Length: 197
Image (cartoon, rainbow, N blue to C red):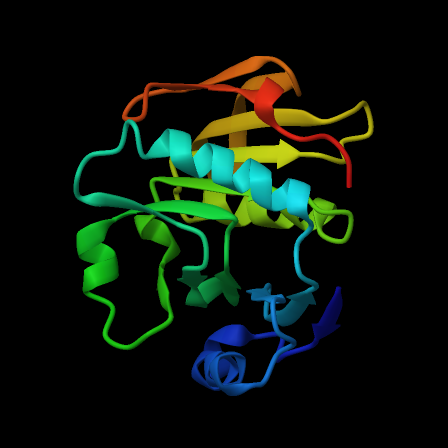
């Protein structure tokens, strides 16, 4: 992972930063996000990471309202905070995505659920920076699949955001079930998640 610093007051130069993000020739397959005003480039993700995303993605579609979508490559922006993320999965109502006029990102505040799956290079961003940002934006639910948690792989569901803090609703080890509440009312069996790097 590498970072390119940007103006510390991203609100002033947000448009230029996003234009640079959109128009630059980033390495193929990499994930490029703006985290707290800094462009962060993450190398292509490993197969276990992608398999976990696919398993959750598939399960989400069994319970979503017809006019909500699950996206793997949609940017979600919080310009006033200098953030443009590409979550591993984000659930957003279709009308919000349909209203995007040529832009590559939706407002983070429109997300109903965000799922992040840690990689060795980004675990701390997912655990700390992104959790705080999603809470600040009022995203109702944040599911963190932490493949590299110190005590072993875990899945944590956060909710009830207040300020930049979430309440931990449930935490399980890989192999156990985790329940995502309404409006999803979905139980995910984490025993199907692949272990390993």
